[in-house]
Length: 348
Length: 289
Image 1 (spheres, each protein chain N blue to C red):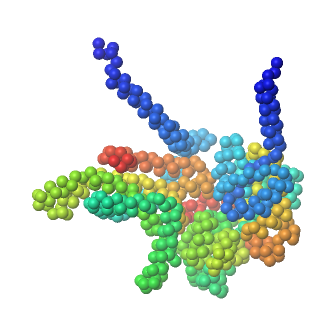
Image 2: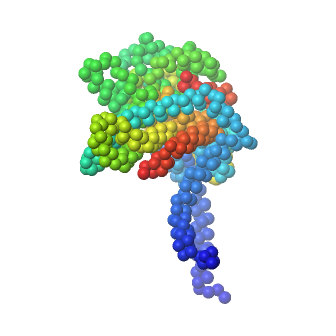
Image 3: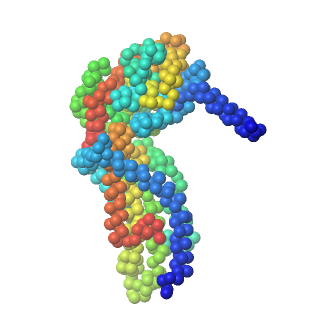
């Protein structure tokens, strides 16, 4: 005979099961980006609207460099992240190493509609930024340096210089300084690039390692010109420093969205991936921060005003002046060898 | 007869040992979980990658970039240690020879920077040393220099800031050792007709040497693992070993190579402690008794 207590217990158990199932019915994913103002901008423009539209919960995490975590999480066999926003090279390399899910574009129509150079079997472009030539307007009130050849010309443009302590974009800039056209860079002539870098090395005061450092160098007048990310330069300029940059010969780079192999919420992750590159969400991103949309269709939505579009790295006219970084080349064996060569270049 | 009757004092001692073990076991477990296991895993990573391999160690010992970094790290550590000793010894001596109230004030000033994060102190040095920084501005105002000096973004800036951060580790063991040198000895020396400088060099200095060794070991070893300071103030060229470790992981995704570098550095530190322990008790270095 069923006692009152056991009946009550049974009810509690049933309702507990009910709670569990209803909780799992509300789908969720864990999305990871790089934190800071950039992630806040995405939350307003893309993440919150996507969560609302799809009726899912998006748990956020952030990490400056996702690659080591991707390796260890997938390596452990039980990843906790679903979707990662990371430099496109990580998605490609991860795809080749079996760490990233291959995408079925029939389930991601927004991604499928993007030009081929904006996606890969493992990823879709999420946002664009550019490594640009920036300079102090105090040092160069007029006749500012306007190309990497100018940056290399220490006689015509005397002043202290900084470059990023990383081969990405730096080798491209060296080759452009040596006369290679922006659309003829790949495959990179690595020997030629390092030879050209040796030439400028004595004039480089600082090899910066973080975006914050590059901003500080420019803001404090510690250097007169440097390669920096466009968003960092415009942030410094907004705070009142007399600095500017040119998109001419900038190196257009992107982060992409990709899904960890064996992600705990794979189906929801795919749904989210499609929503996140929706042209309207994408068009809202540059209203929050100085990065360009990953989906070029965003420029056709009329959400971005023409004067705002002109400031963005991936706006078609700006993009035409720049070199589009080939992540496929950088994750190829030749690219990886060039990356390793950087360390010995720096220490000699 | 005596063997059959348990000695009550022995029993008591055993119980005390058991209690002590129980008391330290939580700490030991934390150390095991947070230090021994990860370090073991690290060492394992360096020799195992799809089978046993010494490839990572071969690279560490044969490739240019590795020994350049090790050499630079030892050079910087040596320079920092010598400068910290030259700066720290007089401070400790002064703190030891003034009345108690003054010595507390002096030691507080030495320890005060401890409460500021290393990162903040690195940026403070940047504000002082950079081209548009306080020192260069001042020197230009005085017309001593026409072009700003390169005080930072190089090895010089790294050494200056590192000395600043590590100075307390030199002063405190020196002071602790000096405290234990009986003042009578100096008076005895003086009563026998030795000048103050002679008593210092013949009596005080030799007796303070264990403190010198303890302080130097501490500063040298801590400096070997410095990361943030050279990263922020080294201008990208001052690649110390810890930066090599991080770069191997972040830039080149080579956990094995990074582990091998870390293991070699760890063994180097252990070797230093071993050599030092032949001369003085390690308690002196670590516990600053």
